[in-house]
Image 1: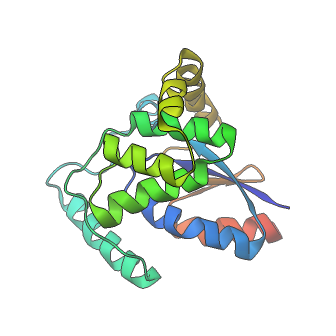
Image 2 (image 1 turned 180 degrees about the horizontal axis):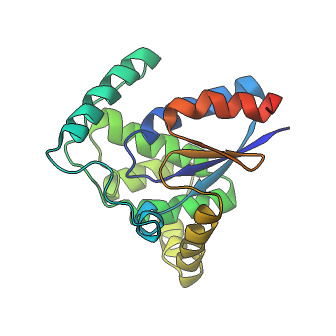
Length: 197
């Protein structure tokens, strides 16, 4: 069965569109998802890249309208979050633990759904607790384990791993050593996983 690495940053706006669709696409194409949560700021810092969507810029205004249009096109529920950006670090630490334990997808889907359709922001205790319940996890255990030195070091190690793959943004997909960046390349990555190129 072909495998696709999916590199996600939980503060990434376009990652919502991917998270809402990738499970169904993976089942359709018979592709195994290898979830790779990572913290984007140090990756961008290593490459001297600035913040992707500066506050009150034309680019940011475009992003919000583009997200709304693309969500409608895909038939996805969409509600613009009241806060941007959010502090995603704790959520990413939890997700990385989930990737190792096998429940990252369920957690991620619920965390993003709550953020992008219910107004329950990623980075809040309410979002974290609800997403962990949806993933069938004991929140106290997970939050403690996610804050452990070992898990924090594992997250730091994601930065050089991302850089080795040429990753500079999220969502990103790695298939057979090939990088695909952005939600609009998700289908291309799936086809490449199945057919090669």
